[in-house]
Image 1 (cartoon, rainbow, N blue to C red):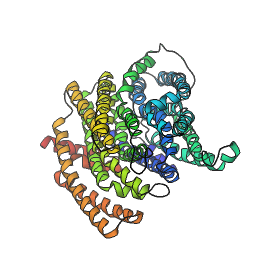
Image 2: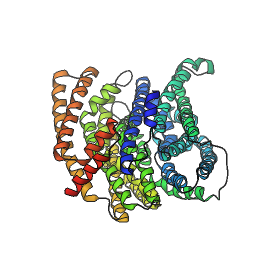
Image 3: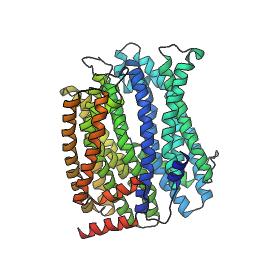
Image 4: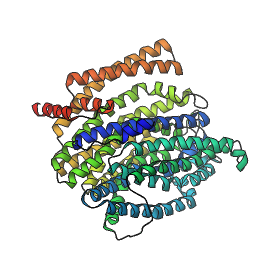
Length: 566
């Protein structure tokens, strides 16, 4: 573990921004992979313990409300507003001034977000009634959701501070430790949750019925604290010691606040749409499960899709933002465009095949990972259905993760804000029509979210291209066309293998594991061979990045020469 951290903290400064992005994306993906794996462990524990039940629906809503802010801060507004400003201070001012800015931001977060936590605890009944009014249709479900929401709301402040620490380390070209902080949260939340919910429950007056879920709620708070504490030693090694400081007139703080307001709205579309869908799902009555089921199925499917989204989209976006910020700070706009284009190419190479794989093999994946305990075959079927529709928008989700920060680096926070607001309105309208006029149920809600994610990315890409005079669009389109062909070939092979294995092996976890163990390598082989045959330039970058080979100058020169010759 220590050797892994050492490797992921190594930074070679004599590389170009594009090289740095590819290398850092590989580092981030390795760390995010561990994070997503531990996240799946956490989800498996919850699924096995509670299944698609009334108490788990209540827990999901209680977690989702503060977790919305987690996604907005950790992968959205705070990073997008703070990292460019903090990077500019490190590059053009002194480290002392950058440290003072960090102290001011941390103090402001404690004051503002702490107040939001207090308000969230006080007005938890109104929040639950707003986002899941259907819970009142089931006796006791509303009250359970209110209690769990109040317990977990302080998680909001802890994760906001952890997000700032992550941004500071990313600006210092350190990606491994902050990316691993999510693993600390996942393991901490499960570990503390099990201890409180089962071992300590009798000593603190919890019953055997409420104890496990209340323990898991407190585990979320303890895990958030661990996520923050995990990064503090690295901050200290980089010379940053967070201390209270207040100066609301500081130009750097005012600039961050100015960017963050629109940035919160700009990055809110996906998460707000998920909350909107939770609202509609709380009214869906399943023939077998009644009102207990659709909320959980959507949550499990969305969490499963976050594996490739975090592994590829978030990792590449986190590595891209500091690089393009430095390009703009030095006035090198062509470097900005090229770095952004290559980042998007990598995103599409990794997410388009992933979306097809999730659609084709979703049932086998969910059977292998979740099924067992109170999570039965019917839950697998319904979760896989939602996952196949969520997967449609995976490239849009991931592409927006890269595009949004580019606007903030250009000091344009209003464009993503307006696109986000329009997306939320479209999703609400689409979800309303789907629930009222179709029989798609919870799967239709997943589809509406995906379509809106693709719409948002296309709008943002078109506006950004016009704003900066192009992003090597012909090269990017050529890569996407080839990636689409390769992904289609992969999908055909994987579908055929899945069908044959299903006929030969039947159902069950062992059969699903065998199917996945043979189908996924075969699909990756077809994808690699087809991309190699079609000369997809991003293929070499991806292979180098995820093989841990960080000296990519020759590869990038080869990619550039191929693109010029084409």
